[in-house]
Length: 295
Image 1 (cartoon, rainbow, N blue to C red):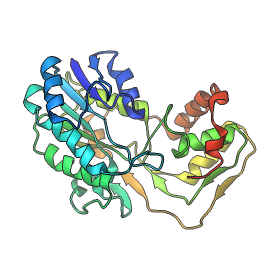
Image 2: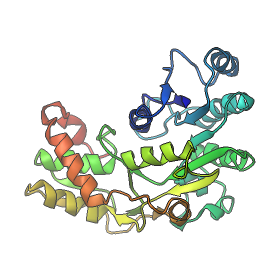
Image 3: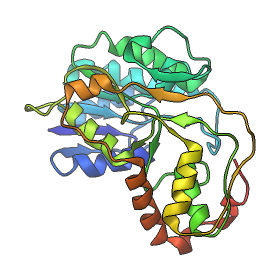
Image 4: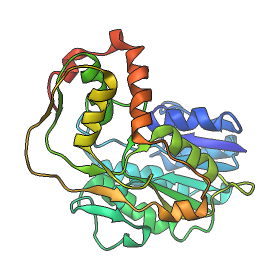
């Protein structure tokens, strides 16, 4: 297939591009080559470069290290609807969403796909994904993927917990967390494999609809920190600033498992081992100063 991939320069997008390029022709224009919020530019680009499918991973970030938090929902929705406006020009539409679609202002404990709409998200990122989800539910050839936490090589180790813990342990620094919480983490390359299945084709394809991409039972941040220290072989402490346990952020992945029962997710312990090896090969490039201040 010939696929337009948006957001290919981002953490998840880079891994998706690497996976899809093994079997598909991937067109991944940069921001300078295609401004997704410009609806006319998107229409013109798709006319000049026809594609069979679109995989939409681009998003204006709202995390703590983001340079600009303004108009986040508007920017994300403009990107999305610039593509929707050209919906007749391509087939399968795969959209990377988030567990925040269910409203992360409350604890999310094994949230299921049918929980959409019980709470309207109060953050801009979640709200934009909420609107997209309701629109995609009417699209007969769209797949919406909802991970709750993604980790892996190349993420921002200054703020992403598992990579942050790995880098600190390898450098002999205490592994720190504000409070313990439970998350449904998925290894980024597993998510990329699900994106490939979502493009369809053959018996291993994924049918239209919304799917949580979660590997099963959630895991606590404290348990992850302890495992990082153990596997690193470093004698460093794990420091938890607050005794209170934070709100859970987990999803029920049984719908995806029923659709593709042969899919196997990387256990967190194995993912930690891979990350420690990856950062271990790059110790000289890790900026210790950004790890010194907890974010």
